[in-house]
Amino acid sequence: MNLCDIRTIRDIMSIYNINFRKEFGQNFLTNRTVVEDIADSCSDTEEATILEIGPGIGVLTQELAFRYRKVIAVEIDNGLIPVLKYTLSDCPEGVVEVVHQDIMKTDLHALLDPYFEQGSVSVCANLPYYITTPILMALLESGLPFESITIMIQAEVADRLCAKAGSKDYGAITAVLNYYGTAEKLFRVSAGNFLPAPKVDSAVVRIRLHKEKPYQPKDEDTLFRTIRAAFEQRRKTLPNALSAGFRDIPKETLTAIVEACGHRADIRGERLDIAEFTALADRIYEERQKRGL
Ligand code: SAM
Image 1 (cartoon, rainbow, N blue to C red):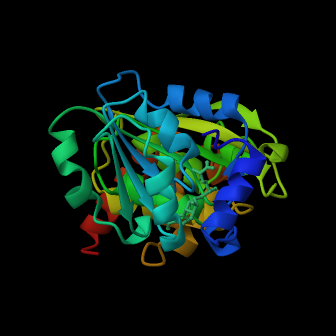
Image 2: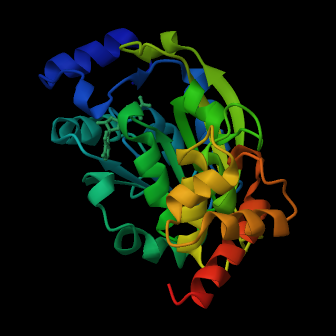
């Protein structure tokens, strides 16, 4: 059954008496080449397990099932569970497991630990736009050693994830992401390749997670707090922005810390890459320790 065919999609939805649910960001892919390209990009090995978030009616799930050893597909919409049972019935036996859950409430360790014991695990998702960043952060912060995360997201968000330090698209999410891995934009997908068509274009981004993090901060929380502070007051100089985020350290001390890291006092936080944020956060952490904070 061709799940990229618009008439087939409409027929399935009519038989199962379901509608596209906007609150779950349901825009289903209708371009076979795009679906195949995403599935191909998910892992370097066919022995991989793939966590798919939001299978919808299963268009991507089917392709994944013929490429990889195991596919765990987590879908929030209970109306789609019987549909998936039907559309995935032709997949190789025992490969796909559909889990009816909200990915944000899923215990990822409990679900995936057994698969990490068997080999590499990667993530694949055409993500609902409204929840892209929380899902991505939950995956990264889980500490699970995913090989890669291949996601379809709004084109504008893709530009942000892949931006270079100092560019207009560079933001807190870029810096945090660079701590966990490296992102590359694979290709752009115009809005006409979805049913219903969203208002904006999308892009596919692959994040390869560092096996060993190249930057080891003295304290992770201080690193994330430093990045947040730098971007919350983006237009301000770095010492001013930091001073709003670390009220317990005098501004002169923060200025001295910024200068000791080799920056001018009038630099803006958006110019710092993850290595520079780590060095800065380490000095802030030491200063807080010294002050008993
Ligand atoms: N993978 C399908 C495709 O490419 O055509 C559907 C993609 S659609 C953009 C997003 C899917 O994620 C929908 O099936 C939606 O119901 C599901 N979804 C939305 N929020 C979710 C959540 N919190 N947990 C799991 N699935 C979710």
